[in-house]
Each structure stands twice: as structure tokens, then as C-alpha cells.
Length: 488
Image (cartoon, rainbow, N blue to C red; front, side, top):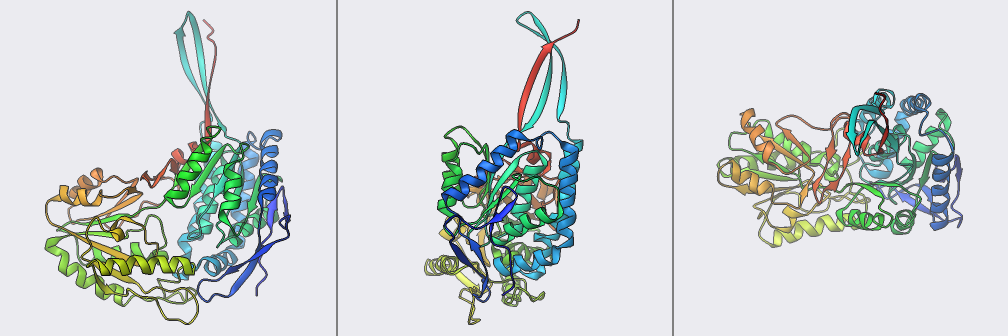
């Protein structure tokens, strides 16, 4: 077994949990033990928060922008030097296929440039012209200042991607951070801390990482602690709502990205040589375990049968299996519990009258957690599988008959609103539909929204707040207005 760092990182040092407990981290492809991780308790969480709080309050980390930029450029350089190990680790503990690991790791490291540049290019202060009120003529200055301590909570499906977003963006804006990783994928967070410790001048207490086998124990300890000023969470709507409710005690700021059931609308003039293939790629990438993936295809009746034929051919022949094999697009499901959930959703859809064109069952590879790439057609727009995230390699197909407004109505028939997709040969028509879709991001034809400079936000139960872009940078900053007497 390769030696991976699995200890907690608190106040600049790696250490075991105070209880001494550890737990196994399993490779979902073969159920082997990748490594063990420290099992943090409430007392460890308190120590991490205390370190982050002290550093935020008693050092100049929040105001020393040139130093921050240098530190974060060092972090970026360190990640590049060790990127092969990071890739391998994400594949080992999260099952992310080698075929898409570049988008999970390399692209994220390259994207750090945008926020690094903002550290020194962002307008941290802005002067307003004189204004008279109550007999006073005053100048006003707007300042943006870090919140202080960020409590970052990441999911298992993209452990490096979401960790680098939250940690890097929190630090770029001058905050300190306590990162709690998902129980299934704690090693990536520890590796990030290790690279920061070995390659940067980031002061002790700025980055703190927590792993815990029971996500509720550490999570509740974090969200109950008034020393955290901002919670930044990626995960399920249920947990996101709980975090928001707990953060309301003390009126702490919350940014939530809570998944989606993203519609991919194929208008009757969609390019059928392109749209089905794009639709499959945008659903099956990362084994369907992605929040903004196009998992709900909404297809016009005029092209429905031909689209299904193409989907059956593409998905039925989709390479799946060993995630270290670059030829495979679909890898394992993260754990047994999630595999059973995927299986239950498809089985209930079949029992309710939906048609499984291909897949629809567990994959037989002896060890690991596998579900075959699956297409479920003839699904009612209100069915469970059309309304809830599956988080597995399952494409749900819904037929609609009518004009573009009907397509929009069906696509918008969801409590989620993270992302959406539109396929049409007429780009102006696609733009008209895109404007009507209730989603934080929309992708037209062969395009994709994700980039460091484009805001990423969820509508409906998909979230609250923004990641990426200048708007995402601002989420980590408080606004202060200062008035002073105008010199007349």
C-alpha cells in the first residue's frame, strides 16, 4: 500500500486525531484500502477553528496582498510539480477515470491564475463623489475585506476540484480556512495541505484540514461554532439546508452549491450527428457523478425515435471499467450505499413503465462498485428518476411534443436549476430558449460554461451564491462603506 498522508493538518502541523482513531479509505474500483485517515472528533475541529481564527485576527494575512499572491503562486507551482501524484490519488480514492482526470486536476491548477491575478488587480477600495445628507457633505469610500474564517465542506465526487476552488479562493481573498473533506475522500485534502506545507510560505493556521469517518460529527461541530464567519459547501440540498439553518444562528454568510437534474433540450432541428454524442459525454463524464451533468434529456417527438436509436448504440458500446485505463469513460460508483441507490432508482423507473434501452444493472467485475452505463427512456417528466439526482451513469430521456415554450416548460419542471443545455441548428433559436431556462448556467450546442472567469451559481434548490469569476471572488468579502468630511 502506497504511503499517503492521512493525518489532520492543524496550525501548520500534521497530527493524529486526539482520540487516536483512524479509518480505512477504500478504492471504489476494487475495494482495496488506499490508506488510512485520521478520524477527527469535536475537539479536533475546535482546534482547527481556533488556529484559523487566531491567524485571521492576529496576523496581516488578510491585508498583505503581495505576500498572499506570492504564496498562492508557490502553491500553484507546487501542485504542478506533484500533479501526477495528485491525479493518481484522485483516481484511487474517488474512482475518477484517467480519461477525464485532466478536467478534475490540471485544468483547475491552471485556472488558479485568474484568482491569483485578482489578488492584486481587484479594486479593493473605491471612492464615491461628495454627497449631501443631514447637512453634511461627505466623501464615501467602499472597502472590501475578508470575512475572516471560512468553513469549507467538500463532496466526494470531485475532491480536488472543489477543494482547490474553496481553499484557493478563500485564501486569495485574505481569509483563513478550515477544510472538511468528505469521509470517502480525505486523502486529497491532506495532500493539498502537504503541498502547501512543503512548497509555500503560507503561515501556520491559514490552512487547516479535517477528515472524519462520520460526516455529521465534524460537520455539526463546524456549523455550530460561531468563530466561523462563512460556510462554503458543495453537496446535497438536504445537507445544504441544514448548514444554512445552523449558520442562521449568528447570521453567518453561506454559499451553497447543491447539485442538479440538468435538462438537455434537443429541439426538433438539433444536429443528430452531434447532439446525442454530446449529450452522452455530458451525462456519463465522471461516471455520471457530477452536479452539473446533463442527466435529463428532453427530446422533441419528431426526432425522439432516432435519438433513442443513437443513444442505445452510443451508450451500449460505451467503454467502462478500470478507471486507470485511459480508454474507459465510466468508472466505479463511490461506495456500496450509492450503488444501491442508483440501482433502486432505475429499478423503480422500470417498474413504473419506463424502458431501459441498455445497461440497467450492476456491472460484474468481481470487486468494486459498478453500474453499467444506462439509458432510461419513455420517462414521465414528473417521475422520480426525472426529478431526483441519480449520481451514476444513467441518462433519463423525456419526450415532449409542441413548440419551444413546451420544451422550456418541461425543462423547467424541476426544483433544481444548476445547469441546462440546448441543442439546435439555429443558434438564435437556441439563445431564445436559453434565456427562458431557469438555471445558473446554460450551454448551447458544443459549448461548456466552466471556466475560472465565468460565474457558476445554482437556482432553486441547486444553491445560493456564486463560485468563480469576480462575482465568486466577492462572495468571500464583506463590504464596508466609510464616510469622511468632503473638503469644500
